[in-house]
Length: 270
Image (cartoon, rainbow, N blue to C red; front, side):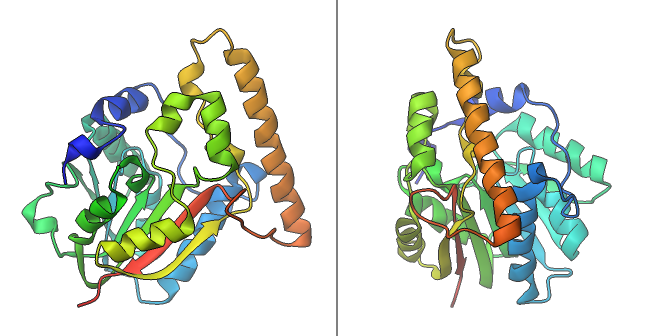
């Protein structure tokens, strides 16, 4: 397994991170609808870490460039955090975010398939947000992620649901972005973890909708961008309307067709 399997590539991410402003830190107490996704992910992680004592345990985020989640994990759960990414600029931006949050952590600029020797078999948790789906062999990528875990460690893999309507809209708005993804549904992602030698605990769709997952940023120089941007904004407002409704009537069922994410939790057993 090597980087020739990577459908995105370092150049794509270096270009992406270089033009984006520094993101705001996670605030799970913010009740605004614009914070709804982060708030729900907070509930997911609170449940995950409630199963075991997290304080002092080691967590690694692979693909950590500009991640607001590493400082969150340290502040909320007392985890000893590390990040790894192959984008040098992305790592520098992550270090800036940690300084902004006043959080200590280690950020390493390295390839996930060729990590520092001391990273192998040394983490209690490994987290990825949107990494595995960029590899033509997802199981091979997951197998590499598993090498970071201690026996009994937990891997959390989150990917965008490109099998459903989010994927359809991504193809329409920017097919080039769609093409750097391998569409994975909950069952396929679960099987990939099994093929990688890990034991899945769960593999589920997450949230009922979030059209903001669709990426239209690369169309800014296209003549049709104003139309694309308007359509994107309208779909996004539809998501927010659904989130508001869920706060009043309860969460709508998560489905393969409409859920924006898939999350798999798996363990490394002896």
